Length: 301
Image 1 (cartoon, one colour):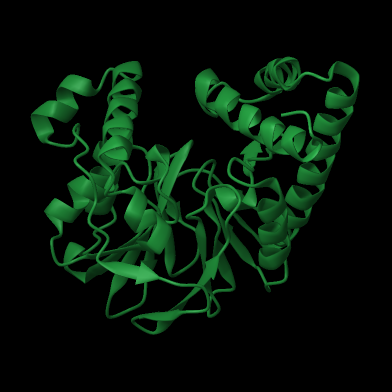
Image 2 (cartoon, one colour; image 1 turned 120 degrees about the vertical axis):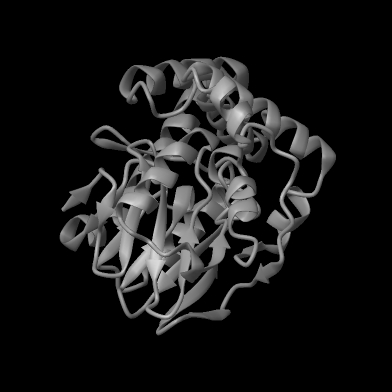
């Protein structure tokens, strides 16, 4: 079953945000956690949903960032101000990235552009969620670490490849995996391979996560899956990554030119992807990075 609209996924997990940008409320009984950091422009929806669902913000004790890309940490500064008692947690590489002036500047610019596209920049400035000034990560999460959230357990997995700072969270009591983009991104009927950082590590991370017993799969783009849809997703993503890597290799063999290959593959992806997947410039960057990685291994870059 696919769940794309805000609301209950299980008795303990609630999807918040919008169809294309999701975060999750994990209810551990005595305390709760927000998993994922979302796009900045979903702040009004998340505020409304928390009110409408009668969520007690006092229970929210942790905000977990699964990786440091701009579309996965946008709401965190605002909600940290709203809930100062909530501890912001992420991997050590994410902590380092989110403190770098250049990264802060880039995320702020991309957030403003996303707000402009949706006509929300003025509202964001007025309500105090427009500007990104960095994030202080107060708790560093490491591979193999177990964190309590009330009567639930957050098992931390290091899953680099999409980014060098990517982690996933597995909640064994729910057989639930919060994979973010490390698990691939739904793109219509296909899965968009997002091996931005390291294609080898991305594929290894997919295999690592696929070894878990998964009944609930929580993505940060295009919602959640339960049952067979959840259990099958990572195997589909493994196949999609292998197929796209082969497609890159075939194109490079024909063109001998990484730039030409990247341009051709971006055109294919844009034609077959949902209009709200990611901006064209972001898809171009992701595909270009994957092509360059493979080309370098082939001695073409």
